[in-house]
Image 1 (cartoon, one colour):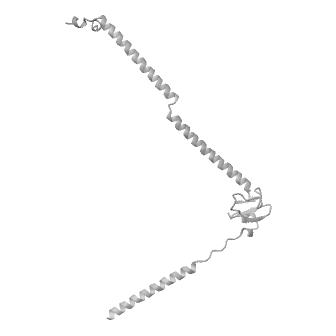
Image 2: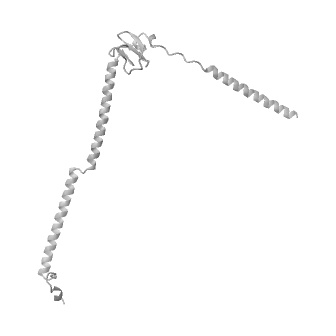
Length: 182
């Protein structure tokens, strides 16, 4: 009986310790969660170098102020800032030049993709039909075959004439030819 009570006491101690650790772990996780700090408004920044590293901010040289980038429009409207005076990303490159550069680079990429596609299509068509050299080779081979056949026919005629001359070939045109050999 004594052994059973000490084991029961040990088991109860472990259960209490486990419950305590579980509660402490939940409470400590709750303490670690904090509310995020609100983002700094763009109007706080007073020069271009501190304003433009933030993607949400736009610096305007005509008004010398940092404003939030109008995300509803792709381009900032003239009421916010003129495109030639707006800076976004870096101070030394104006927004107008950025848009033109991106347009040119995008156009070059699209044109090069179209040219590559057209070249691939033309190359496939060119490969599917025989080219001039191949056609010339096929014609030449046919001419050589035809000449060889003509020479074979001429040679056979000459041999037949020689056989007739020396009586080695029976004349099939002659009706009594089959009786001559008997």
